[in-house]
Image (tube, rainbow, N blue to C red):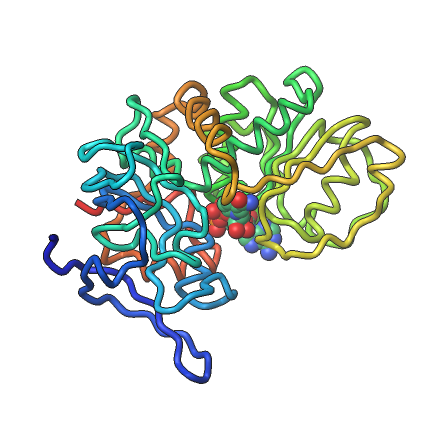
Length: 330
Ligand code: NDP
């Protein structure tokens, strides 16, 4: 069996105060699973920031190794689904929340949670996409399934400089949509235009209390913010349009009105990546390979080592991270 290896380790004391440290662990310190994966790449998502800082009760079992996604190589598998040497991707399924996760050299996981790494992607590229990018793809697919084609009009993306936002912009632009990027960092306008945004708006335009109905501006939206932002874009969505909602960067509430639904036939499409079925995951990853410009992926991601995870977790909650942060574990 493997030598002890480094992991990020979250504990909670009797007063429910959470602490985080880097420590050496053994495989037996990890939770049960039929597959051991050597983690080659992982990434710091917003949810990892919440888990590491304890800003929100994301971690529900202690001790916990955070890290909700990874790409790596199977070392051992008790089921016949994978062989040693197979390269796999994991996104979600409560890993890093209720099951020990990806911020360690090895992860012990359930084979039912894993999908094969597409041949066209390296582990680092897959994690440059990561859960945020795969969620962006799920949002785009939800809009497509609702019939929101590029001809219908502009699509707004909120949290534009974040992980979901940057990948959503790159995907939508490549698919021919006119993308309106909403951001608090308008100084990043050139970067967002480089990803394919046609127009940049300041997020303050969307962050105050929403009117029941506003001028119809967008055929659709990908929303990473929730709260007033989501209420506002619903009120600005054209007749028959749809908004894919996946995030809560502004807040978990939805202080709006039913007017867009009952007077304009607008649809609110909920997107969850954590428990999405395997077939949908495979479809989303195949679409990422087909529809995401790898050059844009390089532009929107930065790479750090294991030692940079804790600082990045704090920065992502402070809204200081642009695009995606990949962790090279090699
Ligand atoms: P990031 O932190 O990378 O991006 C979030 C972005 O939201 C920020 O970069 C910022 O963009 C914007 N933002 C921050 N604070 C506010 C605010 N108060 N009001 C409006 N916008 C704000 O996170 P991710 O992109 O990884 O995730 C985005 C959201 O999606 C998170 O809430 C996350 O939990 C959720 N998520 C949900 C998933 C699911 O399965 N449903 C999966 C993955 C993520 P800017 O600076 O451009 O304004």
